[in-house]
Length: 258
Image (cartoon, rainbow, N blue to C red; front, side, top):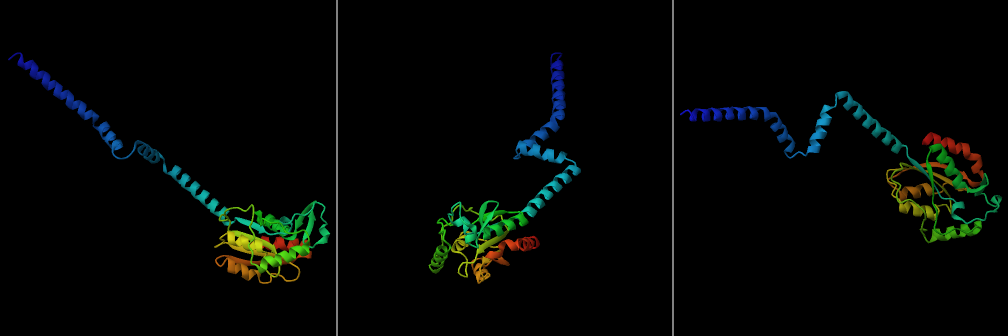
């Protein structure tokens, strides 16, 4: 009996100790269960970090994100591109070409430029945007009359000249400022190729043309047919020999309509 009593006391002491240990481990056991349930540890840490942020920090983060989004949208809304087709960029003129031989040629700071190019560059300066030249894969003749004849042949055959060095996409631009010479009361055929290449639906297209007496002819309606879902705006038609005299008028128009 004396041997049994110490044994019973030992068992009772062990049971009490085990019970005490179990009670002290319950919070840790519950925490482990929360982490190991289907939620990964990294997500739990992220949630805890987010929960530990005070409301002021949350407000600062939200405001910053909103301001960034608004700034990006504002930049996209103001994005534009000055696109042009010019005889100079599509003709292999000699370095010593006489600019006075044609009303479509100009020497600016020692550089040969076409009328449409000059207008497009003024537009780009006022609209604070880039320029993009429409360039046919085949060059036009240096002789103006030969160019006129080829342009008529291209129109008669409805040719779509292949373009070179053109971007794949223009979707980031909301406004296209388009400048071209009026050839045979129509768009130059490379400009048709430009419209074939790009879908300009939803964009604003502001049209400028150089001419020798025929103004826009029917080019505005033609562009509306090619881009029925774009907003076509009639800009200015400028006589070729008067381009340099119209710089301020062109700049003012762009400034008021950008």
